[in-house]
Length: 261
Image: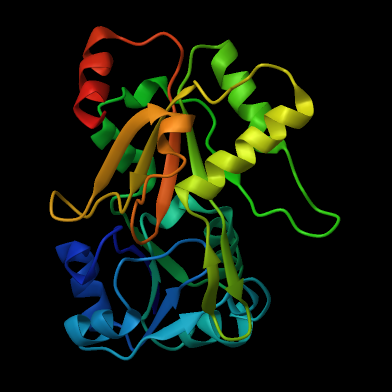
């Protein structure tokens, strides 16, 4: 029996690879991890396209109850575990693989596009990106500023910063409560700068706001400008992310950014 970990891409049901599609067809059970990211279509569209019933998984099911669900099934049947983007984009999936190996379950990884390489659509050189960070919603007694520190660190080595944006999920229902927008993410960064006063960024910092990456020309949106310019831009439906380019750019990167101004 095999546990297939399958990346399903960023956009819609048609992003699946042929290898991934064949594995889903062979699987007795199909699970969809639905808390680290969001696809741009509802799971019902995946079910219709794949011809399979899909169980949507929240964090608690994958991280705490996998032994009695996903891994228990994989000991007796072929199981497909679907991941939005690429399989290895989140450490929780490494943990699932390790637990499967402990139970002598065969694991096959089938990769796909993730935000880590799709962000290359901006025209910024991928090998010049530094550490990726998440901007999270402040909560009572929890307002992390790690994103600010990483941006500062990346700037010090001349690296671009990819900022992923928070998703608040009802863990019991597996449904979204709120997905952070580019506008909210930029305002949170300004708030941290106002507090820290370390001159990491300002209203005049050049940034790129990226919406629905991987969706192709029909729906992907990239806008470049200062934080002040982009604060009130309507980027449409999520998922969104932000890129803060390095202060020194290759001339081709500058030309590409010019396309998005």
